[in-house]
Image (cartoon, rainbow, N blue to C red; front, side):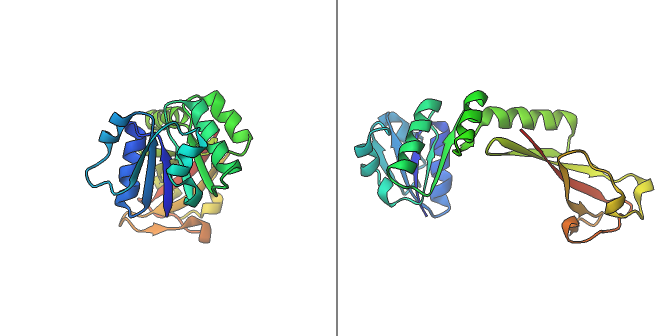
Length: 205
């Protein structure tokens, strides 16, 4: 896949290095020449020095032929302008913006823009971790999905999934058995056994 990354700071460079290692064709734009030194020696992509809200700079970086674009500079407003240009003038099919301000993130998503908000993700991850040792979270647009692993009480052994009450906005993803095998709970009304763990997903906004 051809991917254009705007921003080559710590986040942008790490993203470029990862995508390049996965075999994607990566092009990256940075306003600062020194930032390109953040790229791995193994990075096989293309670098462009310039201001990404300049259409000529975007063209030079190959925006007319990319499958996706990620704007990950430290400036939320600049990221918004870049993905709007990419979507409206260059018809890039998949565009994503890094947004650090949760309030701006909410506005962006109301306009149908795909965002990743590190602030929301960090807060959700810490809250989940403080409430449970066995949890993780991922940011999906304006929502955060928290995955948790819960031990099944001994007195639940022999019960069916349909007999278990879950919290609002929480769904059961799978059952992990004591032998580490998984049962995808969505496929059947499984019976719980001693030593089982429930893997659940809960969406928050």
